[in-house]
Image (cartoon, rainbow, N blue to C red):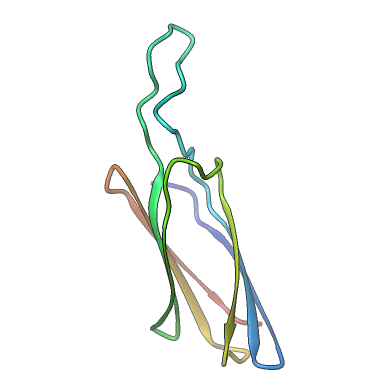
Length: 103
């Protein structure tokens, strides 16, 4: 299983600024290893986020996203103490969900 995501969420004037650092190798499938064999594709395909259980973000990604991707978005109507949950799914079926409290 991948390492936990680093999630920071701060609120100002009812708008939460959410910053996420995800740990994932994000292989495109076009790179070759030292022996010249192709490294199989392995990348995040879906990212979603909820605020107190209500969906606030859904994204579909492809191979053009860098290793250990960073995502930043804003959510209106948030307040300190709210819970942000972020989930990603990759093309191998692996899934990771982490949560943070809005500060």
